[in-house]
Image: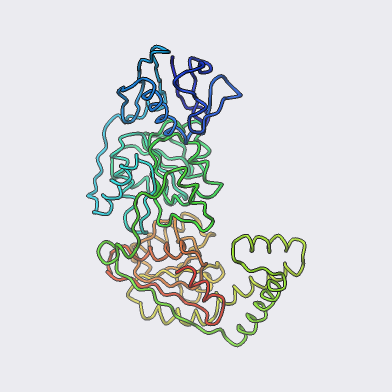
Length: 482
């Protein structure tokens, strides 16, 4: 009896003797993980990401039926065993047949103890799982070491073109081999290929069976529905997720664990600060609204609070806010409450006193590299114009952004201001001072911003300032993100 596994159109196909499994066969394909009878062609089919579990279950099934047999740890190629009832059993795995690299790779890095431990923990977890380490701690180095250790064609999947460029440059320098690219205007496959999440999804039907290892940078993005298919359609049995913030407030990190594996190694900022990352302080500075700002804020916030109290909305869960948004489509009062909430938020986050305080901080740290973080593009441009600071927003073109960051790296500019776009997915040069003028209550956003300051460089001590409008809802937002 012959079992055959192969990749087709983003799925794993399985056939038994060219058709269905005979009654009483030692392996029933429909009991394998994710496998169902294929209504489009003879045989069976499963999502590609189930390949590793299917492969292991097939090997275990043959083992259980036929006694002790020799199965390669990576289940390469064909295995054969004898079963008293069905004669010779052959499992022909066409997917792993192409997973060997032509030449071995050697990582050029000497891993720090926590990096080596993370790689060992991932290896012990059957090369599946997520490594959660702070920004600046060298997650890319762990990824490079994993690629060298696996010695298999690899796809590295990233959320932005900036990271695409960064990873490709890093891999070419590390291994001195051609590195392919899907995305950023190029579609070229090599044994090691870097891809954006979007391009990985678009190309996976064709190439999803060509890689034995998939590395997902900023792996928490896989919790989003629009990103998950980038992992679902790849057959790669070895999977490594890299992130500074695994858990998501919407609980979607459970989907990441299903697609990549659970967290297998973790360290937070305080575990590494002072030795491998810069020591740091977080300093909160309260500012007052002006009289006119206070009046406008109280009026807008009052409109919002009065409505939600009358409607019995408590905001104990995210569904409460979604309910308010749904109501706003049919209830003018609900719509006015939402608009009032937005007005109040803009007032407290863009308070004039924050710019006065920012001026004082820039003067204090005139010799340091400073990144100013905001939540609003309009405020970025106000700061840029007032203090003559280069600005980066979502409207900044890729070439201009690279030029500004290169200038910051080289010391042409000693400070830069950005609206959210530097929080993650961008190779940001070292800085030792950050000023948060406004942001969300997301711990992920806070962690990413802090991490921008912690790479040991010219300064071995970093400081992050939070400017918070006193006696406003921003105080609660600041507590939530901390």
